[in-house]
Image 1 (cartoon, one colour):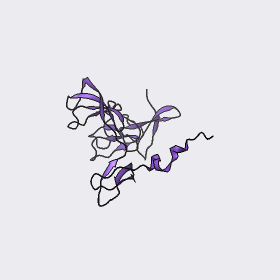
Image 2 (image 1 turned 180 degrees about the vertical axis):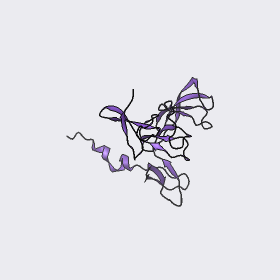
Image 3 (image 1 turned 90 degrees about the horizontal axis):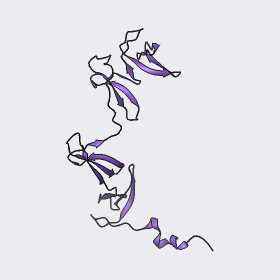
Image 4 (image 1 turned 180 degrees about the horizontal axis):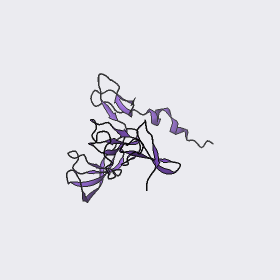
Length: 189
């Protein structure tokens, strides 16, 4: 006797071949379509009817209102919500206020002044790939940037007012960011 229940695999009741509901706009059948964002239900009469709907419904619902925490933008209470990408803390004043608390918001300390324009300061930024770099806050007028943390220490060889901190052989060193110089010293304590 077989341990598999073959009645589960009957062609009329197969789970993957179930009928979908009809389009509320034109009455045609809704079919699974694919995009770069993932699968969705769309009208079979496309392009005559452009009705679409998500397959998975992500219910955004409030879990707990944080009465003792106020929104820094509008002073409404904050709320813990469950959303499309998981749990987050947002403002109860949504959609008028779009504040969302991020736990990766460290207090940024400004770096040394920009050696190129001498008007702005160098700040830590993140590129679209998640890598950090340090750029002048007077952008787009000044496009000076370095890939390593800048230190306000003049280069002994060329006199450039900023050096970058690197690690070589487990030791911290300062290197001139100028391509023609590249002078390296041990980091002063």
